Amino acid sequence: FGSPGTPAWETADGRGAWGSDHAPPMSVAHDDRGVYVASSMAEGGSTVFALNVRDHKRWGIGRCDGGMLATLDGKLYMLMGITPRNTSHQGVKGTREIQLGRIDAAKGQFVAWPDGKTRHVIASLGGQRDYAPREPAGVSVFKHLYNPAWMHMESLGLAAAGKNLYVSLFYENKIVVIDSVSGNPIDTIALPSPAGLAGDRQGHLYAITNRQ
Image (cartoon, rainbow, N blue to C red):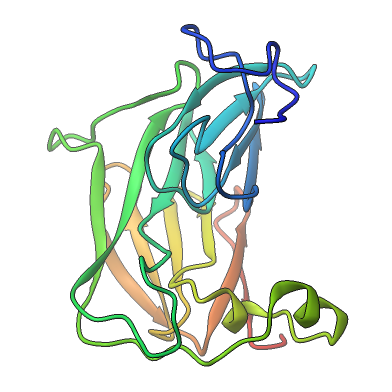
């Protein structure tokens, strides 16, 4: 796939090849072990993978949806299902689920919450979403039109703050608060068009809303 893995192709130990064969990286997180990188999906290669402090790949997980990343207490959390299967501006029909996956950051394996599930549905979006028409990526960057709405993604933010996780739902105008122990939503915060999120160990949450 033209990746800088060692070697550049997939291997049984998960250290070959780097990222996805279809999508560019869209999210990065880190902890004391190193750096984690995710894309929106991969048929070949890895949707999400881990690098050590020497930029050598430690593990990778592929053939699944991916999205924003966050780390907390030795676990890596990844949003899944944030990109509609059909991104035409005519709209996307049917129920769509935003899921949160839980991964052992050391081993690169999905691990279960107390209820035995490795992925939790944190939002079910029914009905039809009408996305605005958009220019091609290169034109949008040149004309300074590249913004969260251009992405046509339901969520552009995942962050850990204190012991909670926070997920922004751009088109729903809210942030979902998730208990990291149970993996279940416990609250929502109303905010217009929330996009990127960041948090600190003191429990403060920082969010981008529109241009603020």
